[in-house]
Image (tube, rainbow, N blue to C red; front, top):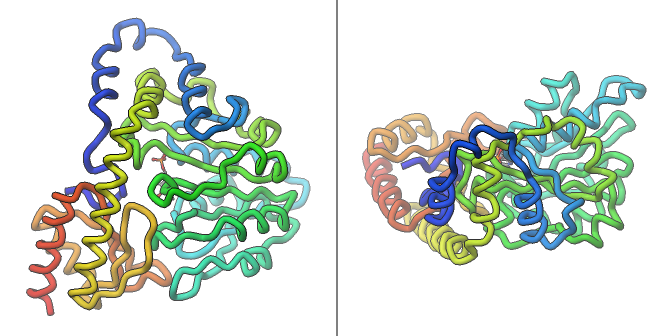
Length: 334
Ligand SMILES: Cc1ncc(COP(=O)(O)O)c(C=O)c1O
């Protein structure tokens, strides 16, 4: 059981698979057209088509934002700002493109502090990255604080990574918000709730003028034809998404209850995963779980996550088996 990358553990909707099976030689032979996929994504988020940039997974959206904002080097070496711990692609992309990432440590509860982040912004800052909900804790950041931060740091960009917003049900995406805050970009992915991580499809949503520099960085045929064909179908299958969100929420509650029973510290996650402090023997526990077929993510080397693992909350059946394995392993090591 892959419970380490927060994928949809049930996979994609059956309707998506049917659509992919119907693709033919010409779909493989011709460059893809993105009109239908882009409109479907715009409709899904309730924004006009020109507010959507499709990307090869949200990872590419992050890379494109860094690449576009680093083009102007007149102010010296470019910087990005983010919290620690965080999803590592912000720093990977920043350093890969010759910049430096300034990290603001979170407190023990992983509470987001907009004032502390704002204080780290200088004239060299091109982008502030914030994941809402936070990864790896799943703790939400608060939309009002994020909107105020966007206002305060302009002309630097605020890139809010909403990879897990399907699960939290909380989003900044609103056409009016982008009109008021043109330096706000929101990243979304179809890898999680929609179950098409293997196809690679994401999007950056924002004011058209702010997306334009990113669009010049993303290659013209970044999503392949299979991803472009799958997207509208994945989005249209509302029942499948709703079913999976219910499964994930139930799994998260089961995991939380199990951790309480086992006296393990957790944090109030609104995402499809839970960060769990399992104690000193993290590596041994991760290995023992893997030996029982349960792969979880060892986050213990990151600041603030000492002795912690992160477990995906997906299908309830998988979660029940994972909890059994965790109880067994903890009994053995304690
Ligand atoms: C916070 C966050 N942002 C972005 C991504 C990347 O998503 P994608 O699969 O769309 O590249 C992930 C994937 O784990 C993530 O956790």
